[in-house]
Image 1 (cartoon, protein in one colour):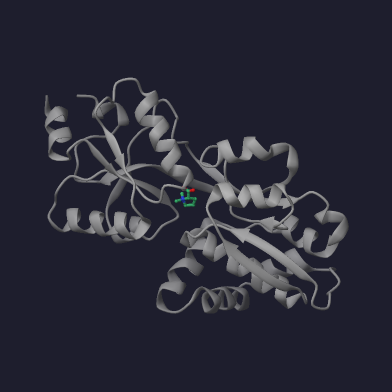
Image 2 (tube, rainbow, N blue to C red):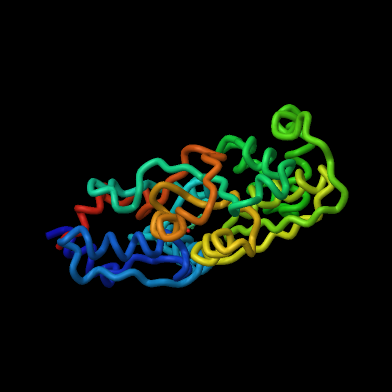
Length: 267
Ligand code: PBE
């Protein structure tokens, strides 16, 4: 029917991002797990590559299915919708958590307390992400910190400063985590820490925290997007809970497309 036609128009291809992203693994699981999506394939590329293909399709009002997520500027630049996911394999509303290596609380109680208190809203993260498009994440993080003294105070109040103690933050390379990682780096620097912030694939990030090479991360998307990495290392990391609520990953299409659900992809 109509959707077989859509499959042909799209060459049965979902336009994906980096192979190491959580959403890439979830998308493979989805294409295999729905049971009726034979023939559809995920084309892995990069976030920039996916955004280029999305932009081209929208300019020509052509169909396109991407692996997308929010917060992201794509939702303000274009009129997009998530495809419904009745089997929940791509995750509904999710959170971003803070994790630390075992022993960090004893070794660096002051940093640990700040990491544990860190909590902000999607709008805060978006402000940093959008501001960074004009300049750098460092400038955007600094601006956000200056404009939100009460929040920063909540996270740092009563915590003694240190002198140059080194702390290793591990993160992922997407803008959401460049925003949160850069803000946390700047806050810890204000407290006297010498901070390194290293972006890696999610699998490496969890591994680094589990084996103690990294001290902490504010980047895990849970409970679904990074579920497999989290479960692999759950016993060797400390989960400090959510630092942000209300993210989402999934298959995303332009609003002008007539399909609404992943189930509409079956031929
Ligand atoms: N993302 C953005 C990442 C996490 C943050 C959804 C592209 C992923 O691992 O899929």
